[in-house]
Length: 246
Ligand SMILES: NC(=O)c1ccc[n+]([C@@H]2O[C@H](COP(=O)([O-])OP(=O)(O)OC[C@H]3O[C@@H](n4cnc5c(N)ncnc54)[C@H](O)[C@@H]3O)[C@@H](O)[C@H]2O)c1
Ligand SMILES: O=C(O)C1=N[C@H](C(=O)O)CCC1
Image 1 (cartoon, rainbow, N blue to C red):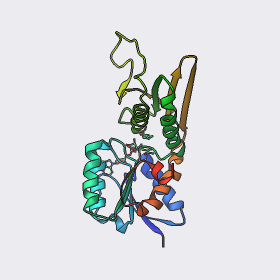
Image 2: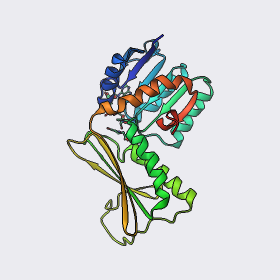
Image 3: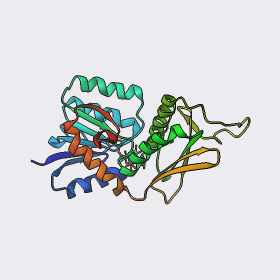
């Protein structure tokens, strides 16, 4: 039996790509595409809904799906602990339903986060540069925020001292935004899609871990893994790495 998939945000850059990927997959069936102004209802009888919308809309969409027992795969950014706790609460009331929320479905981006967290305890300094297309509405990227959190957790656990920084004066923003003590710098440039560099340094050496998504098709293998696996993972999962045995 094929998995029926609804796409919320279907008219957008990611949503339209997901519709194409679902239609091209033999084991999946597109139950419907939904965008602003559409009544979600039972999402066309979908087993799984995929949400690529905007940070302001995604929580309501997820609650709508989970409240009806529809598994949901979410790529939209803008999640924080309070919003995740709200989702957990609704999932507790709907046992058996699964939600996967992942800031990045590109397999290389997932590996970059993993490698960066692994490397972070060995270096004095770490900073993150994320580079995206200029139509992106949030900064820094959800991926960079998650990378910084994982890096910071790894350094905390290993007892690494804060990175050295003698800056005593400067223009606001020149040192980026601090996420969990890690400076994150956001570039918006026409021609880019989604890119991230994690820069690590100690005396006499640096290590740069870089990932580039040149095309939104790069996110589709990960999205389809999410769609196929979410039914086997009841409750809330944050990050595709948990479906990849990483
Ligand atoms: N997790 C990942 O791998 C990944 C990859 C790329 C983008 N993203 C994130 O996905 C999100 C969407 O990115 P995009 O480039 O496709 O944006 P986009 O602006 O091209 O598309 C968003 C779509 O959502 C629709 N929308 C807005 N509010 C809605 C609502 N209430 N109900 C239904 N549809 C609604 C918009 O009309 C639009 O068509 C962003 O948060 C982005 O950061 C995540
Ligand atoms: O294009 C976007 O917008 C992207 N958003 C995600 C993020 O904020 O991390 C993932 C990469 C592309």
